[in-house]
Amino acid sequence: MTEGGTMKQAIFLKFIQIILVVLVLSSSIFYIASSSALLKNSRKDMKYTLKAMDEVLDYNGDLEKEIGDLKPTLSENRSRFTVISLDGTVAADTGEVPVASLG
Image (cartoon, rainbow, N blue to C red):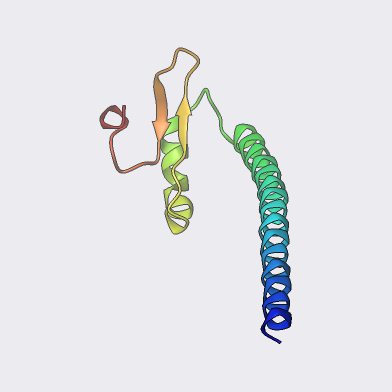
């Protein structure tokens, strides 16, 4: 009788092990798929925002003032917007911390 009980326990343990492996694999696949989709959507949203900002800003005018007007909107989301010129210098920035201290 103990042999039958031991056999049932062994089968039950194998069953639990298989269930755990399947659970880990399916969770991993779901995590990879969902993070990939979120990353793709985030990139798309960022590109859209950058294109919209590029259209709105007048690079020949007072860029600091234009960026400064965005501070209230950006501070609601704790965001920072920095315009960098082609030579790598910061043309305008909405951050409270000076850019020189970040590098």
